[in-house]
Image (cartoon, rainbow, N blue to C red; front, side, top):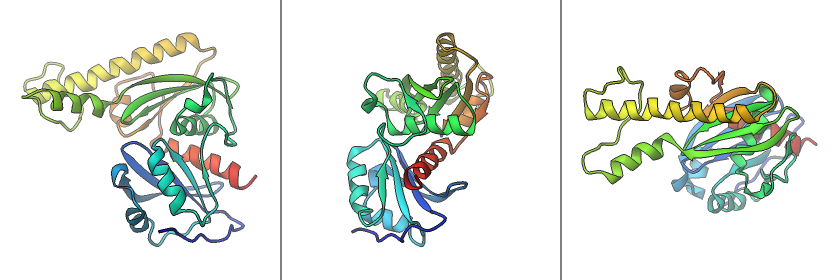
Length: 256
């Protein structure tokens, strides 16, 4: 199944897609505005049918995809074959430079975050994206992507404990009430939240040591609010930073 797109309008409405390992999110973007859509699809469930249902009633002129799942990216390229369509990569018009030995290895979501932080905040910058993995991406003072760090995400750590032990349950993360856990679940909350904040803080300090200037530090992703409230080094939380980066890149591509 494929969709038929409208012709490009004077004010372009672009369907923006953030196709991550866990969830696929959508927004409608123009040159100056971002409207996140309520529909989200678990990436494993992405199909022509779920795409049709999620986008029912939406109007758009073009499609800009940011994907880290090649199989699903191919599915969407076919689904949107009747629309102007572009998939973000290091070869796209990004509005930033790249200083990285093998730029083809940089995840598209990491590039989108770098674009977003440079245009919406400033550079130099460090973007921390709390998802299935937690990624730290470094943008230099001259708006150049320099590299970063990849570590296990909070869900990876907590799910691993539940899956690999007989007595530890899956937990919904929340702020611990005390550093001394009075139950198994309390103890797991302490280890996950306080321990994770320690990991984040140490990586920030190491990155700062190697960066010239004073970087702005911005967090995004599902666990950003929870972790950032205990890490004073994080100056801003921007839940839709990735989509904003995709919007900016889409504007450059389709309106150039």
